[in-house]
Image 1 (cartoon, rainbow, N blue to C red):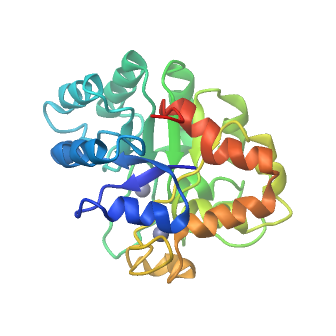
Image 2: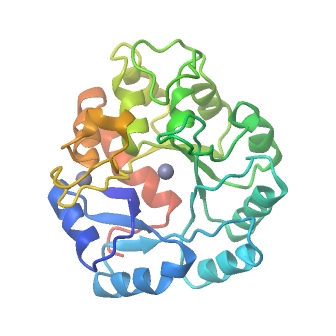
Length: 281
Ligand SMILES: [Zn+2]
Ligand SMILES: [Zn+2]
């Protein structure tokens, strides 16, 4: 299985320990540009298990050149991008051009409702994102995060990040996954887990419909792949996953709502194609 959303950790073996705990063989190490050497070292130690991404704040001078160089040197994706920019901003448009040019996907954290008092929104303007999806057909977009997944429903409350309960059909994310071949969805974090577990009458058909567009990721911060430490960075709104490993929780959930064939697609095939991971790499 491939975890497409594993943040690089401080100690060399911590990512691998998490993977072994939750039964994942491969991972994309989400790597900020200044942490590149650390990611490279990790890959060298375990070349069969890791690939790396690159992320830099597109509003900072030199960000595009930095990311281009990292991709030339082996980074397989851009992300996650979690900055206070509009999805339709000149800065982000330069990233979309870069990703089309270099043929790597871009993963974005889309969030409006704050997890903590004073937290500012990331990648704003999602309700108009179809304009970008249409304008950049050669760019592969991977949506992730609170607001991206809240839009699995046509009803999106503004007073919370993780809506619970029945999903109203016709949500933007559902619609756009059907309409745009260049949009994929990352199932990671409480956001993905919540969206796929909140309405058992809805999710099996959703997963079946988008089986070629969903990619498994954890975004888990637990220490051992078994729920030790803190799994959701103490985000109070995500306390439903406290004490649990997000990777394990979402893998169990996926098993319960899809066939073994689709499970394999979501946890390996789709992600390995997008991130160019081969079984023996
Ligand atoms: Zn994120
Ligand atoms: Zn975990």
